[in-house]
Image 1 (cartoon, rainbow, N blue to C red):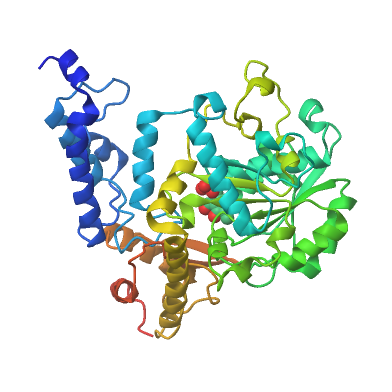
Image 2 (spheres, rainbow, N blue to C red; image 1 turned 90 degrees about the vertical axis):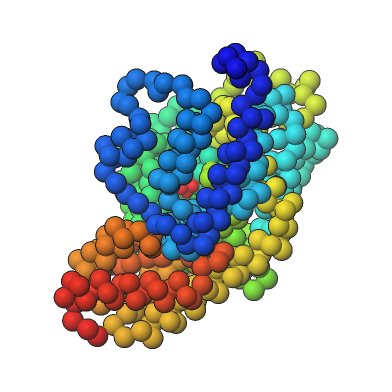
Length: 487
Ligand SMILES: Cc1ncc(COP(=O)(O)O)c(C=O)c1O
């Protein structure tokens, strides 16, 4: 077959079943814990193993060459489905969201405007309305609602929580300093109050917005790095004394490092009294809203002005898919005051365009990944997943705390758990490095109040106590090899 004929035969039809076979084998072996969860060769070695050159385009491959490449590539991935995967807050994706990725890859509807993806727009709105209902906010406005007063919330899906935080803070700035979009921050002197544990994307957003990262004013936190509501007036006073107006207060639900929830109700009360825009970064922890048992952790969230929620963390959605939700929809529409007349032709539009709400111009149909997951596992499947992971993490905490020489700094509130193995700070780092080298477990580490901790995020739907037992044994073995005194 000539290459033209092969093209006509269709790569998807021809190679799809083979690719799927390889992927299913990959998934099954990862789930059984075969092979390493992670392998980190030197980049140059890896490039050579994959046959990648620096600069030149790779030579085209025939089908078997292509499948051989895919097999080599899969061999060099981090196996998210491996029971030893305990590292970062990236979802172990549900198969449904992988199927949506395939559909999106084929259909490729750049759906920031309705005419480029009507189905995808409808799906995104449905997903956002589902999230809004879980938060307790009104649904989104539709064209048939016209200019009716509302209330309507605002929402959009973005490529990740970082972009979502930026979008929400732009909405806050538009509310507080509407002229800033055209005139810049001239003399604006705005600042953002945030917890010391706020994700770095908040400080990045502040930098990107041209406020200068010095405009991030830390608020008082307790020994767990959770915001102390009684410290808020002093932070506001400090901000005002420095001549800055307060653009927003950012709370975490939950924080990235320790995984703890800020007390949203008290913070929200204070923000309301002070007339301060309240933004909740619930990228990781909003999944608790699905559970009647856990949703109390987010009590007070309804008072927020804006929030973000990463589906690619606890909603089993493949990366990336994050929601920006804004209680008053008009505020989100105010975030980007840029006109592009060739795109904004409202009157003739049978649907609605999302481009006014997002940094992105060509926008991927991210909602399908969440919708497929809901269609195939149901809201109840996701609820059970979140509850299981939170419960398992609490059990891990008890097991670790009762193991001689090991300790956790505080009980977990989500599926993130920090702990210390016997030894000093350097020993914790050494243990992690050795674990990664051996490749059976993948965990991260974090610093809390100047002390180094090992950190795990229990993402795997099948990760259980047996895995933890093996991990602790492996940690003890490394400790012994490094001469750590037995507890
Ligand atoms: C609390 C929090 N906010 C924001 C982010 C950034 O999200 P993303 O990685 O999707 O950009 C993270 C990432 O871990 C996070 O934990």
